[in-house]
Length: 355
Image (cartoon, rainbow, N blue to C red):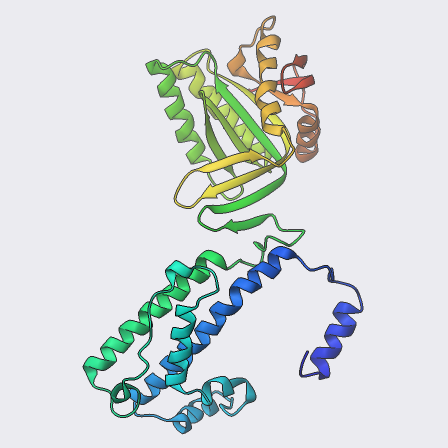
């Protein structure tokens, strides 16, 4: 923009003119840049100091560096590089250390390393090897300080992880992991019928966990929620139905009466902890998961007067059945309907056989 010309015209007519950007400042972005700018200033000071140190250690000057730039079809004399060319390494070290002593950016406790300022034998003239090693240790420590602060307070986002984009469905939560918003997803909930701490129950839980892991792939998430209950999420309804059928087989072989299973549809929040488990949660203000687990109480009511047992069927809420039929391009054939009236779910559901 400062240069004018084509960039300025493009910004004014193609971006501002078409009102592609919201002109209202975003406080969180403002805070990010407020934290970022003093870190960048320190990086500049460190680069000026270390860059001239390397040139001196190699017995080079700026004319030698200019030849390297020319070989890359660039010019060291360009105004963009004057911040480095005209830098004084002693002044850069002084500015860096003053910033350390009076740091007003984020991560004050993490910025500790100081750069050498006054040793003329190391900054001007031939650099003894032992002095160079000490200086490199200082530079490495200073770089580590800045990298740590940058990672914690100004973490990098991938193109699809920018948290302020209205279309973002994936973002990094610093120190936690990756958050994904899964929209238009199918949610499989299940629990072990009359689960106890007995050996058959534990064997069935182990079998379910093993099966969940075998089904793991991109876009599939699952969690043990406690109380012998599980939840799995995917946009592929056929995948979850295959999973339900596999778990039904384990229930028949290991511990009758097996598991109760239900399929719901909606949007959920999935957080994959760094080096840890996956957590599946409702979006703010939603009650999809609570309703999905309470819905499977309808399996008991339906099977009271039906030949099939709880382990052999799966219950669908209305929206899930509609989306399921659309995905399969053909109507499913429910065994019947059942009215479910519970704390977090109220309505009629359809029951299908897992065969």
